Amino acid sequence: MNYKLQSWLTSRLGNMLLCKKIATVFAILAAALYAINIPISKLLLEHVGATMMAGFLYLGAGIGMLIYCLINKTLSKGKQKELLTKKELPYTIAMVILDILAPILLMCGISRTSSANVSLLNNFEIVATSLIALIIFHEVISKKLWFAIGLVTVASIILSFEGNGAFTFNEGSLLVLGAFTCWGFENNCTKMLSNKSSEEIVIIKGIFSGLGSLIIALLLGESIPAIKWVLMVSVLGFVAYGLSINFYIMAQKDLGAAKTSAYYSIAPFLGVAFSMLFLGERPALQFYVALF
Image 1 (cartoon, one colour):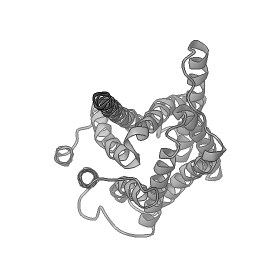
Image 2: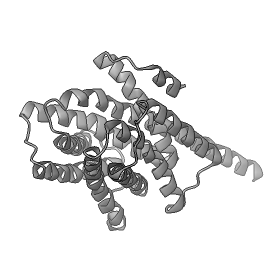
Image 3: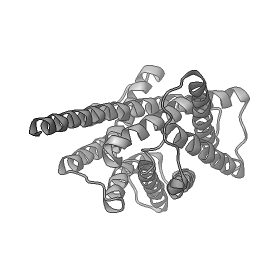
């Protein structure tokens, strides 16, 4: 009996470790797919307004994932994933609202402060996600993970620091902090849904958040771009947002919000690497210091 119990526990532990390793791969893959967005968006922003771009990126993610699910359902007869229910409705609504509110706050903040300041404050998202996970959602965060989050935050600050005067605390800074706090809450709301179908979550998040961003873009006076740019942005949205968010949610299921956010924070470094590859940019010494 003891031998059977020991064998079962060993098997169970092995499966848990394997799931965490796979989840880690998902988190890093999510960061890599999102990082592709950085250099390509720089090129597309010459033809598409910033808020309009956000709208079509989200819509591309939602509609693209919907098409993917329909094709997958037609071709395969695999096990159906558990769908969202009324029980998850509050987290679902909060996720969509926060994904609409955060970009608004970010755009308002950008208009009132420098881009260097925004880049530095961007590092607050991982801290916000972790603190919210600990205080509100009672997620267990080890000392080792806090140390890792600290290192990631310092490295990100080094990466985005642009010299003297790069950081100034003003009204714009408060709005930017508000945006990343919203995304911190949104990450934790998504974690509460991570046991459900990740594809369905991406579809809901993409379509409703995308429509919200498009309405805001039109209210701001941005014009709808030519169809070829809409298609390009939408395809980028499916890859860099749809597939990325899908893998992110799959990682959260076994890693939790804080640890997934820590792994995902390699995205800026991968973004610089992709910029080197696609745009021919050459990073300064601070990139290698931060990477180390």
